[in-house]
Image 1 (cartoon, rainbow, N blue to C red):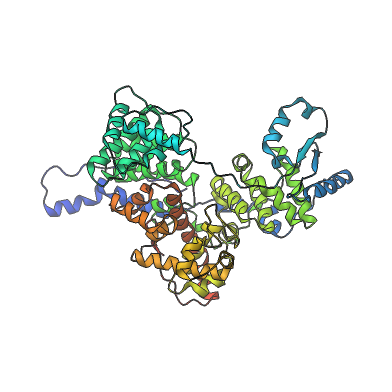
Image 2 (cartoon, one colour; image 1 turned 90 degrees about the horizontal axis):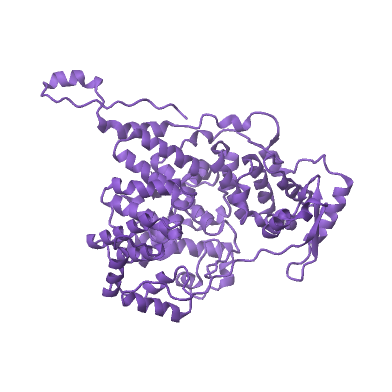
Length: 605
């Protein structure tokens, strides 16, 4: 990073000076009011100056492993025979009763199928048997199944909680589960006398009720905003949850909303402690946003040092992110990496955790045997084990991403590349970004785009379905643009679910629907995207509830975490798609011009 210039804020002249004398002395004074300008200029001129370090040295190039798996000189005859058995076991139809796969140690390390059954593997490693011989107990290879949706609590439990709240009591009832306070509060049309009584009790000195109750009562008060009375009530509830410091996701949400509601009042002093606690916690949905708003407050209070401390931390957390782009006014320190022929080196084996090397070796051998289906099975555990894999060298994760690319698993590919970029931003170059942001189905997007910016549509499709034409959501959304059949029928009467799995039909109807939302919100792309995810009625409620001029503040105040992330992730996608492909689209695809889409982080592109 570039070095920071020291900033000295001299006091403004205390005595009346003639205009001429003031002008003569002006070059020697730096008013504190110029700090924001200096921050803006410095952050816009920053670049990752060691981007080419990923290209130095010898080893395997990323572009080469995308085409072919490098030869493995360590393979022996007995290893080949093991892989024959391994291939037969993996090829068993998961729909039937799978044959047991007998795992064994390869080349002195644990078995190649380590990640296929993580919980079982952990137990086996802790047993004494693991140290006595090369074989492990029978291990079944199972097909990944979607998680079952948690059943809602029985209605009597919700009714019982609601009755207690209405009577001014808040103690949990038998069989109450997390989230049941929320379900009970949904039955209340507004803030009743019973809820006021509960609120008064849990705010008494020395009382710490469940953080879930503080959180959802605060959200209930927010529903009555923008009246200041209800904003202050929500702030008091969130502040108590922060003080009680129960370790739950509800505490984090309360801290986040306490900070944002304080920022509405331009009260960064109250916002600072909860933001600091969120920033120092394990990285989650709130930590990077907390860094953003801490940096934003530092810029507002003209604290240059604090701004860059938090900006640098945010960049390390999320170098490509929407909030990071916002702090740099739509520029990026990574922009200098683009447009260059940088081919990073990968590591084909891990030195940090040699136990994963047999698993990598198994994927290599199945790739050589052209068994794409079996490589996909071996990639299945990427999702549940990504946090553990993130402890590996970035070069190893980049190598794993090459298997996901060749096998056609975009979800595993995106997750692995994201973890690489967050660990080593120097890997953000054209060759990796083009895999992270592919131009799939772009001919169909151009065919149906009309007045819509095709880059914006590609950004939406990437977020909705990861370019999987057969994608289906648990709630019934279908296809590339994840259309609900009922919504699609408002665009084309009688269209069926099967027709929505057709890429051409899905994109055509999806663009029509999205264009309708853009028109409804007078061309406001961010509101239209929020509406695409949560529905236009919800967006109307939020606009009435949070009439703030700062669009980033409005987006982070959205109470639905999914929608908050949805809008900012598509905004991020759009920025990088635009940087990567704008010139190509205008030249190769013969597009005359691109209608700009405006996002709060970087204006219109």
